Every structure is written in C-alpha cells, then in structure tokens.
Length: 84
Image (cartoon, rainbow, N blue to C red; front, side, top):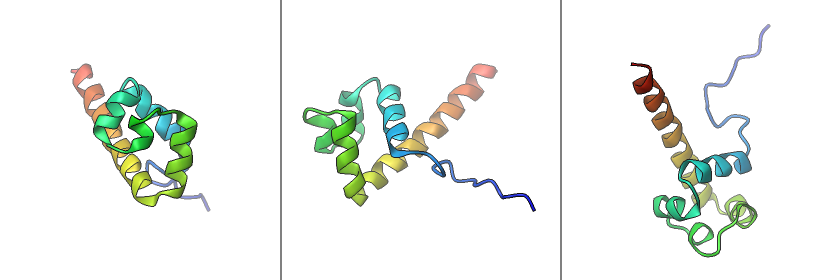
C-alpha cells in the first residue's frame, strides 16, 4: 500500500525553515514584527532567539504558522497572476 501524502502544508516543515521563509518574504524582522507584534520579532530579533521563544510559546507559534499559511496562499495567487 502507498502512503498517503499529507495535504497539510505544515507537515514535515521545520519551524526554522518557516521562520526563515517569513523573514525573507517580509524582507526582515521589522516588517514581520508589524504582521505579528511579539517582542522576539521587534526587540533585537534573531532567528535563534525567535526559535527559542516560539518553541516554548504555543500561541505565538500558532500565529507564525497561520501567517505562513497565509503567505503560501499569497505566493500561489501571485504565481497564478504572473502566468496570465
């Protein structure tokens, strides 16, 4: 039997990869901090300090994952528009 592929875009995605992709999409922590106003993004931010906070703070991680899903949808829309 074949294994079912997960339809969840977060499946198998590491938190550090998600965070790096968001920082890249928003061109830095400053814009990311405007999207999700948490201190690890607005006060002396770094990938490592943000990961440390997000790994132990469920509500913040949920916000990051939700924003990531939003960004994936935006990228798909942009791609579809560019193909026309």
